[in-house]
Image 1 (spheres, one colour):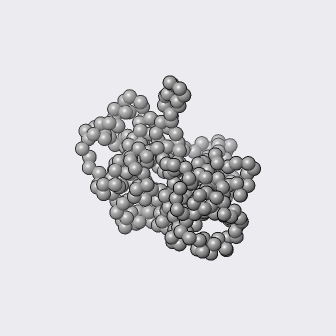
Image 2 (cartoon, helix red, strand yellow; image 1 turned 90 degrees about the vertical axis):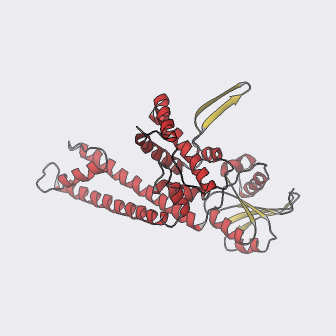
Image 3 (tube, one colour; image 1 turned 135 degrees about the vertical axis):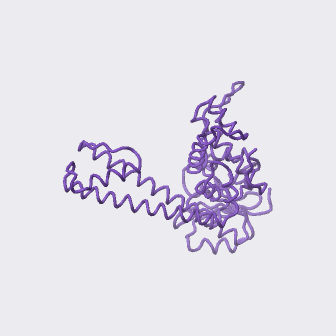
Length: 338
């Protein structure tokens, strides 16, 4: 038992469910509170443990309540669901959040600063821009195939062949189709400019952040991966050892065990999907740069490639890069190839 009240909040847009429990885990009140009244309600409470699901707007409210002096816990949603009893409603959800917060060895989501959320927002916007740009290229390639025009894959081939098809001398397309193609090219160029401007902003930010600069000393970690890591984990102090970060990223094998039988399968794919994807992309580029090198990391990667192939080697390398990143952040050291 602790000496603080527990305040469990089921977050929403306008109407929140607030459940306040005493240190002996007796429900004091469990009621709905509007968005306008929620800050004043929490401000009038004694210092308490405020538990919420790590979801939409949770980091904003966590910062607000932390500034009031409360001890905030952001609980992953999958750890709350098993405690929902009876019908699915806000009252039971708030009670489930409270019960989940009392579990031993609970690993909460670390609170993000405004700076981290800015960088994370830039990454999410850029990722969406790239997805939209890819969608345009795929649609144009599919439409042109009906006209007997087969465009090569990739952005470079797209831009090159679009210019040829829009040439007035080229008669493979009608004027109506050329008009649509020109608008698709304009949309593609606008998305490319926005994506490039975000990348420039991230590069400028790296020059101001020593943690990102330290991460970039790792091979396979560039501006995008360094800023994505910082936005997700900060200095990594929420993890007790390197493996904890790898487990959180979902790049460790998934265990299947029952009785005397136990074996490992593919990676768990838990945690931050975007960050895992970026690290694996960085690892893939590293596979091609280690050929002929004799440092320990390069030799290890070459051996993995020979035994397991490129795909498994990329995931294993991403796992190792994540662990090395945590070590560098905790030791305040730059990476040195041995």
